Image (cartoon, rainbow, N blue to C red):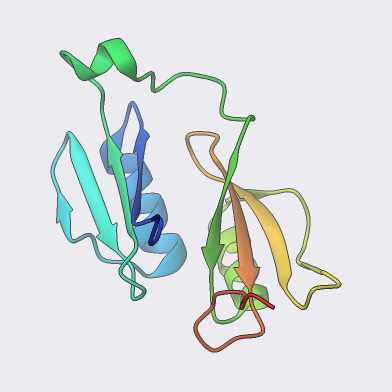
Length: 132
């Protein structure tokens, strides 16, 4: 039985750059960081990590692959404030936040590696959409 999605690990050519992007854009402090790997532990317990593929991992992972096939979801308390902060920092988006009929509000963020993130404000206190 699957309990939860616990973490995500994304390949990057520049761990320091993407770590700074998430530190500045979302006021996060890395749980661990060095030149090859960084990890953030979010208040929900979900872990988000970035690594530079070298050695054996370079056979299975590419930091330069096309990033347009998937998007990842990030929940925030205030989507409008997040949009303003990220755009002020020069982050790429595909337009301002929009309302969805299921009660969430979101915008699409493209990070410095080209990864797509749907930044969402959920109607629940936890930031997670509740199952009906």
